[in-house]
Image (cartoon, rainbow, N blue to C red):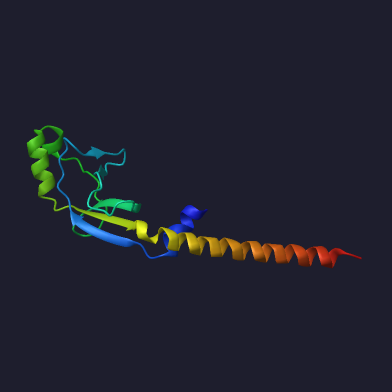
Length: 128
């Protein structure tokens, strides 16, 4: 549950940077999306999302490209360069760790207090 709550506790940082695709180093997942190693982030950053996007902001999915299917690796890399892809990374810097931990702790203590109060009220109400 906290995996859904944590990203919303403190507004994450989003960076968008140009991508240079080199199929000798990068990989592609089963959805046709390019998996590129994330670099240039602060040490210890918690990556929430990392996407390769097109100039219009949509997530890039590799179409059927003759240069990549039957051409050389250089031809395929040249085609990728012509796509002007960017990398959009959303993350929480490590410096926010204790802030997020404090907020989570306060929320969980508040929930525990409400439940304890409800239990106490229910027990007292059910006595004859």
